[in-house]
Length: 408
Ligand SMILES: *Cc1c(COP(=O)(O)O)cnc(C)c1O
Image (cartoon, rainbow, N blue to C red):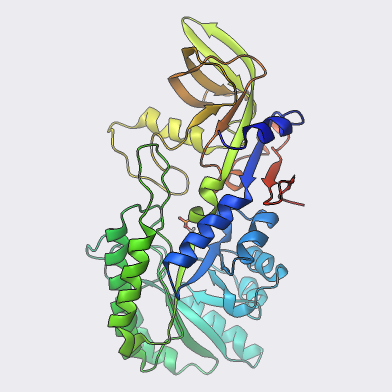
């Protein structure tokens, strides 16, 4: 286990905590930049908005994918200009638009929202350069499009373009589509990117001028289960460059954007938790851990899904559920002898279970376990107010070897 000694040192102070590795974040960001030449990346702040992490990722040249006015302001706090902050979310209020208009590029999520942005821009006597989120006529896998709460149906977009063009205080400069997270097959993403570029060309023809940006959303997956292979970003980057050459005449000069949260931070984080108690009840050995359901909810959610699931192969429902074996439980001990245990948390609910009947090296009271894949959708999704436990600190191991609070 990498960084085990450093984790153990921190565990002298805490019974549970998040541990992020800055070097891993930077290397994931670099891999994307190297493999996707000429592509702009936006970091999806909702996956992990810890300021130290945000700062690290922005310093690699990433912009921000903001899902709320709060996230727009967070990105602004780190000095990003409006063209590097894209604000895309359903159901923005007038206050959201008023707050975000000067700070970001707003992506209109509905027909009503285009009108609302026009209204605010008119009051300010400015022209708002916006994007439109589209619900395309195709799915991520190339089937016929489906109904969605996100964006505006492609057919409606073509119908409305003439009216939008006539609006006095709006200029549509880009499009945004995000259909799915956590894809590991490069060929699936490749086919999706091609459909996206064709969509952009069709949109340009309908609106009668060239777009400034095409935001193709996320989809970049990371291996969660041990048997999964990493996404072939090199292949995908080459294919993307080839598409841009192929469509050079129609799309040359456009800013092609990808968004990602999990790809840059997901694997950088572990959740460390201590064995508080151990007991045997009717033949089952229970390991009671500190703050699991409330500190890092995703392993417990996976157990809940499995408890009710009839089938063995389950679709993910990101970011709450990825797959049945998405987390590894790594003891920070030297024990070799194994036993079968059930890992539970210390909350007063029986659903605080993170793994049932697994074979692990023997654990004793006071030992620690590191849970993998805790860098994205970990701390932010967890119900830390539940049961009045203290929230786990979020620590980051800096490249210089120091360990600091990621929120300070
Ligand atoms: C959440 C979200 C993302 C990030 O998804 P990841 O799977 O973490 O990369 C990207 N774009 C949009 C619009 C999102 O809502």
